[in-house]
Image (cartoon, rainbow, N blue to C red):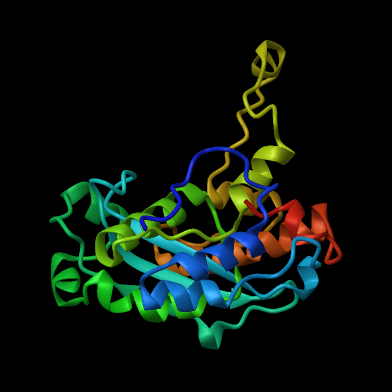
Length: 242
């Protein structure tokens, strides 16, 4: 059983509780069976009642078939509070030696990576921290595809789970991101979907980029601001998850 593969289709209509139930019955890996058995909330559950966890991965590149995770950060939160004491940050060994450009971006040295555990050693506690919660990310193609690939390589089957993507929310709120001719003539710039730019639109403070734990915290705060300004705690989770 290799599990489902992700595609780029909008998955807001997916029945995630049923998908998790089916995966718990078909998964061979005990780690994955336990993860799926925790299930997830129903689509009509209010955001204000939903357990959330922000997740960020720093990687050596954008292709999970050729690049590796070098660090991960996660921060449990709700719409009212961020649970910093339960946050997690780990550096892990990449499969291949990262290039100099990658190190300049994430600032994790060769010696730090050499002393770090293999990703297989942190998979079980990572999935335990994510289980039963809805994962919030900024650009789901990174977190979901890389974790799916890691599970395929290390556990023999893929990983599926619902996410809320703060970048996708901003993309829906700003469908005309590229300025037209008149906009350019007036000096208007394209709307950026980068995490820092999205936070700036909600007057959130600037954080340094490309640290997994800081970016996870930044994503949690961004989602809280998006809900406060654009939605509300009563919004069904099914309206936003993918």
